[in-house]
Amino acid sequence: MIRFEHVTKRYADGTTAVDDLSFEVAEGELVTLVGPSGCGKTTTMKMVNRLTEPTEGRIFLDGDDISAIDPVRLRRRIGYVIQQVGLFPHRTILENTATVPHLLGWKRGKGRQRAAELLDLVGLDPSVYGDRYPEQLSGGQRQRVGVARALAADPPVLLMDEPFGAVDPVVREHLQNEFLKLQEKVRKTVLFVTHDIEEAVRLGDRIAVYGQGSIEQFDSPATVLGAPATPYVADFVGADRGLKRLSVTPVEESDLDHPPVVRLDDPLAEATGRLRSEGARWAVVLDGEDNLYGWLPADATATGSGSGSGSGSGSGSGGTVRAHARAMEARLPLGAPLKQAFATMLQHDAGWIAVVDGTDGGRFLGVLTPTRLHEALRRSIDADARDVPRAGVAVESVASTRSS
Image (cartoon, rainbow, N blue to C red):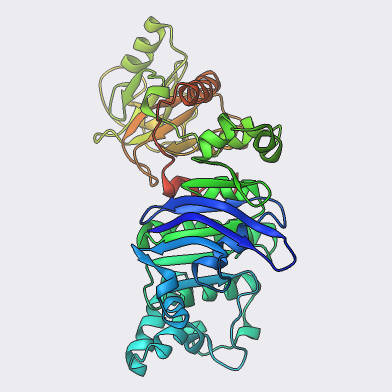
């Protein structure tokens, strides 16, 4: 846990970089500090590991006043990741990753083992990359090594100063995805500095929006986007904040419609007859365990085309549904952000999306239509206005939006 109590940083020339700052970051929480250049966000972060000393106020780390802790000892308790990574060019990737364990006096074998585990965790096979040097890696790979090095001694707190700012947009989005997955596993207390509101919204459990040396708003991403506290915040997050809000509003079960359902081994004539009698144009096709298989048009016939194989068996004309069910590519897991749902609709030119209870197929829950998507976004905005909480976006779903 990190706590600021009335912290001010004033330089000798009279410039006040941070003015009477008080806030708290809970254990395991990822807080993004976002604002324009010179607003004090990086100064705030550097005061946590005493690279910059406050003029007034106190900062606590897990209940300890950091001014009473030796700076070197303090920094070895805190992971630190910067934009340019700062890897030692003369050391291998494994040696770079084991830097802090080495400084803490770990035995060489234990440090290298920990380094290998962390490289594997960030997606770099230590048997492939461990003996390479920084110049032999891409920018994105070096940034992963920087994150692994920061985690090597298992610090409770991680400070990240625009760590993904020096890579191209495609690599940046991929690194953001991977970091979200990593944070779900390690649950560190993170202060993450960025000037990009999109990155702040994407990564943060909460966002601190900085003005000039002070925090204008400290809230969840959804609240910052849906209910800016000041005109400054509204201007900073942009006129398209409604679109940005799609990234932080999840699909919930209450957002779903429930079309007719048929089973793979149902007789085709019986299934299509029921659809026609109900006035339905199509049905969702499930297997025997309620997992999504595909869909069936009401006008399917024994001679119609389908993605299944084999004629099947069963009573009635045309065999079973299995032979005529069509593939359903437009699907996503419950808890996915509405942005992913919208992108999936566009990608597949679909009028609706199947929603399941897992990322790899899973039990069918219902369908999301454009109308219901709009209603979900509207309800989210209204709920924030009434201070009613909605569920959070599933981390694995956020991490899967890299193509959206």
